Image 1: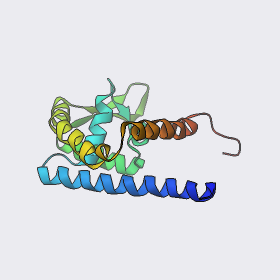
Image 2 (image 1 turned 135 degrees about the vertical axis):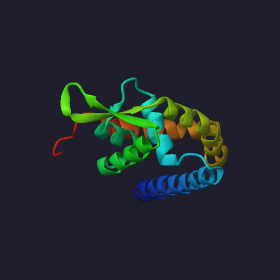
Image 3 (image 1 turned 180 degrees about the vertical axis):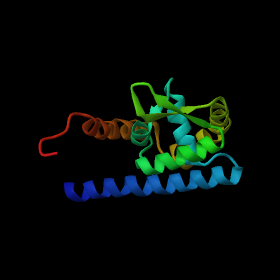
Image 4 (image 1 turned 45 degrees about the vertical axis):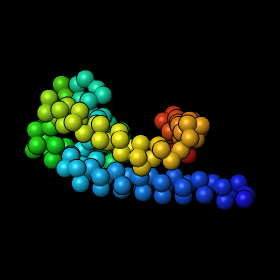
Length: 152
């Protein structure tokens, strides 16, 4: 295979594997009656910080559009899992902050979520393959987290 076809094959494998594993995990979480995977991911990110995140920051972390993040935060807020807090430095901006109920929902769902990652992703890969994925994809992330390239 040429390097060009290897590139396309790697890209396609990443996309298809992501889609298949994510769909299976979402289906299993739904069947178990837990919070949706998108809620879990938002709560996980909010739980990782002390004072919450602005909608744009949250969107970047969970890889969703600002509009979609805003709708998700509306849903989470309606369920009492998140609250909005004003940004003291910018009165127009708001932070999403996880509540005690949100932490509870996250902790309740975590064991099943981790088990489903193992079932639908990790068990299909050797430890060496897992390390290679982390190493390779971390380089891609780092390349896009750095300073903008010329022409951008």
